[in-house]
Image (cartoon, rainbow, N blue to C red; front, side, top):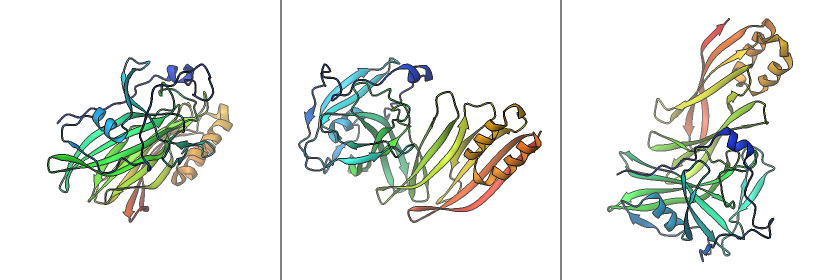
Amino acid sequence: MQLKKSHLLLTIALLLFQPCAAQYDSDSSFIPPQATELGWKTFHPGDVSVPIDACGDSLLHVLFPGKFHKEISFSDDTISMIYWLCHECKPVLSVYDYMPDFSEYVPDSAWNTTVELFDTLIISETGHFRFFFFYQTTEMFPEFCGRFRGANIGAALFKEENGRWKLKNFNPVLGSFGSFGRPPAPQIIKTGNNFIFFLTYANGGAGGVYTGITNVFLVKNDTFFNIHKEDFVSLFNTEYGEWFTNITSEKENEISFVTTGIFNGGFTDSENETEFILQFAPEELKEKLQSARKEGTKLNFTLKRTFYIFNEYLKLIDTVILENINE
């Protein structure tokens, strides 16, 4: 079976210069789309079972039975979205992961838009599972927003039963992640009898250093748990250093963060800048990076940290510096 995967491929230039669409409450001349009232008393679709060949658009219809629409994006991609209302739904507070001072309630009292984000099938010894991710927005064109505006991401988990997809878990708002309103596409891995998925994104100042953040979610007993947040998994947009992190699982119920990068301590023309980016370095490497800065040398490094999944938490069990090369 071939499932649709929808990703918003946007350029940095467009992100920097395209403003958000007008909000319903802030522009009296703006005509909101015709939205359909869900008529639910709770923010949940209830007992859901769909045909095995149902596409992502069909899942949007089932989970949010509103007004369906296909919008052509600025990158000429086609965005499938649902407009809907829910006056009876109890709003959920969604706090922006990068800056907790930014928050909003979902659903909005005026109108809401749900857009497909990621749809994938995973086969394991315990059955066939389908992960369907989406995000909520009140923007007419939900591609571009302010730098410190995340996307309210939700997820649904289906399991194949009797030739149909049976909804096992539905979480309309996992949290607000990303930047410029862009939702990060999840990465899913299986470890032991559990699934893990990551939401990784980057943010920072205009023209300055950008750092990456990842949130780790555990899928256990068909329930989503946000079990770990890792700051500074990447650093870029500066000539004084950069690093990136890959997340893998080599053993059951273990995941490893492998961070590889370079620190240009030899750039003595801007000591303040090199000192500034040290605050974003992994704690295990700060002492070595400080030494490289004082000695004016360049340091290449690879750091591997392994965590064990203990109940609904991650426990650090091993730290290894694989490489340490000075130039």
